[in-house]
Amino acid sequence: MKSRGLVVLILSAIAFSGPALAASKRADPIKMLDTDNDGTLDLAEVKKAASALFAKLDPDHDGTLDARELRGRLSSKELAAADPDHDGTLTLDEYLAVVEQRFNAANPDKDGTLDAKELRSPAGRALLRLLR
Image 1 (cartoon, helix red, strand yellow):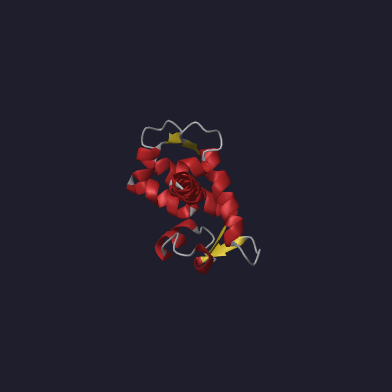
Image 2 (image 1 turned 90 degrees about the vertical axis):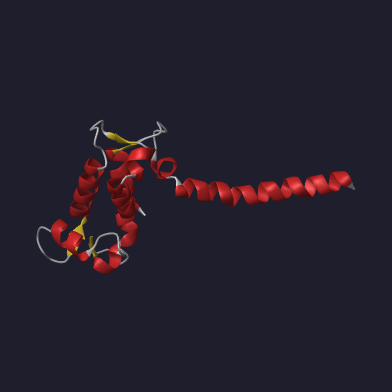
């Protein structure tokens, strides 16, 4: 009977570790977005993730995101600043320009990559808001 209890304990641990591991991966943007597995995020990886998210956020498939579709990722002031044609929406190129600006702001050492420390900075957190 002791071995049966041990088997149940092991199976329970396996069953519950799957969601925990998935949650930890979601919680770690580097693990989630680091396609080359170098432990950092470069601009290409970030833009790839931002492009995929843009497509998901554009349910009407009109090629733009309005304030409602952006769902709090940008304040109205930030949206206005990122909207050069002042139409109240962002195209993919306009959205990626904001992503690149925030990437550069989060990269003070100008090495072209963001590590965990840089992503925890205010500028890094602002970038991550655009990617979630």
